[in-house]
Length: 143
Ligand SMILES: [Zn+2]
Image 1: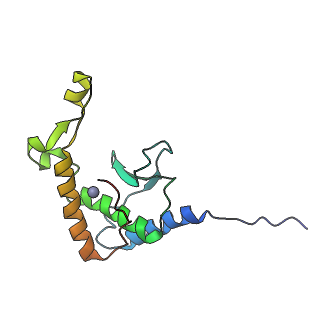
Image 2: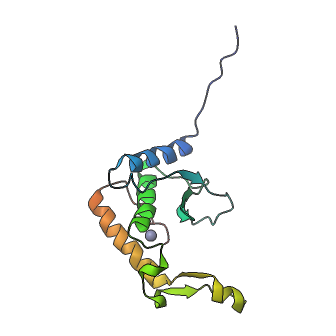
Image 3: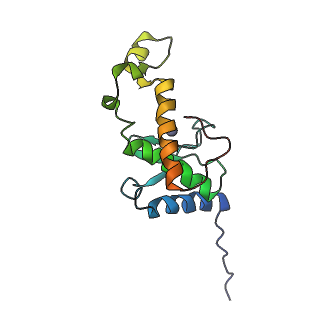
């Protein structure tokens, strides 16, 4: 008689997967949802999830409920759906060089102005509230 292996699933990982399933089941978000990836564990601790190069990544060290993950993933996907990731969809002054001591870096590596980024998040959150999907984490992750 062989030893039975008990397969344990990390409950925090399961919460990520359950949150992702909630998002993928929503008809408005399903077309936006591709694959979900785990980010590098060295990603900034304050990060929950991000869209990077078309990939939706979650921070593996973040602990949250499935409902909080659903809200977080939906928030990220709505930024893509609203066109916030394409700098051509805004005026040039909303895209700035990242601060750096290196002028070459600052002139070439561009990012949304923090005020523009906050406005985009507010638009997403307003829409997300009407969708009634998930629960915003408390405190809400930084933009
Ligand atoms: Zn946002």
